[in-house]
Image 1 (tube, rainbow, N blue to C red):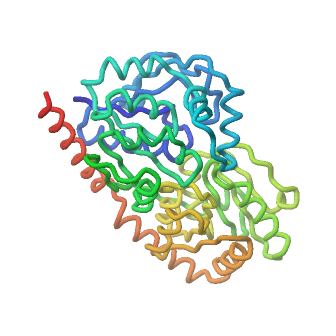
Image 2: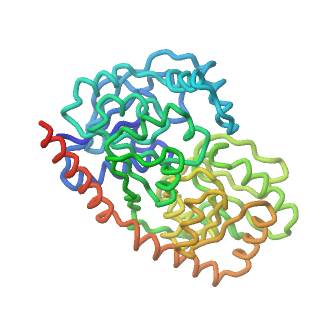
Image 3: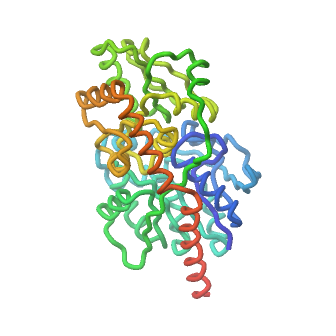
Length: 399
C-alpha cells in the first residue's frame, strides 16, 4: 500500500508553512524507503488564481517523487470571495455559505475521482485541513485517511462542515500539544480515532553567514527580521504599523528586513526604516537568520512555525505575538524569546532585545537547544512509521 500526500498545490519552491511541511515529510518518508506519491491540482500556488491550470495535467517526477496533477474547473469566484471575506473578518457564516466556501474555492473532480478509484491502493495524508482537496478527498475513504490539519484558532476552524470531516478520518496528526488541545476544544473527542502530536522535523544542517548577508545588502545597523508570506493572515500589516510607530518614537538606527512573497502596503513613515528583499534564495534566508538581532513572527495563526525554528537554529532570539498559543508556548518552553500583546509591549521587548545583546544571544542559544532536542527528523519519521504500520495492519485485518 503506497503513501499519497494530497495537497492543494505542490512544487519545490512554492511558499507557505504547510506547503514546506508537506515537502519535507514527503522527502524524509521517501528517503526512509516508503513509496510516496503526491496528488494535487494544476494550480501554481496559494497566490495564483485558483481557477487557472498553471501546470499541465498528468504525472511528473519532482525531486524523485511522482507528482500527479489534476485539472481544476471553473468556479464562482465572486460567491467564494463574499463568504471568505466574512470569515477573514472573524465572522460566523451560515451552513449554506459554508457550502459555497467549500464548493467555490477550487474544484478538481478528476482529483476526487482518482482518490475514489484508488482507495485501496493508498494511505492518504491530507494537508492542511481548510482546502477542498482535504474536505472532499478525506471523505472518500476515511479509514485510509490521515489529516495533518495545521489547525489555527480562526473562523475557518469553527465551520460546521469541518466537524464531521475532522472527526471521521482514521487519524489526526498535530504539530504541537496546543494544536491538539484546540482540536479537542472545537471538535470534541472521537472514540476510536487516533490523535497524535508528532511535530515537524527541521533541517538542522544549514549554516548562515551573517557577515555575507550584511555586506551583500549593505546593512550595518541592528535589524529585526521577518521571513514569510506578506499577508493579512500572517498579521504583517500589524507588524508594519508597529514598526512605523517604533521607528518614529525611537531614535535607534534600526531596520526591519522583510523576506518573502506577497504584497502588503508599507506605511510611508516606515519606508526609510525597512529593507524589503522579497523572495530570496534559501541560502540568503539562512544568512539573514544569522545576521538578524531578532526575528519577529507576528502571526496569531501558527500551527508550528518553521521559520521560528530556523531562526533559533541560527541562535537568534524571537519575538512573537502573545495571542498565538503555539509560538508563545515555544518561547515559554525554550526560554528562547519574548512575546507581546500590544504596541507598548512590542516596543518594550524590542528595546530590551536590542540593548541586551548578551541576554538576547543566550535566548537564541536556548532556542537552538530546544529545536535540537525536540524536532530532529529521525525521531519525527519514527513516529510516522508507527502510524503507517498501525493503519496498514488495520486494513489487512479487515480484508
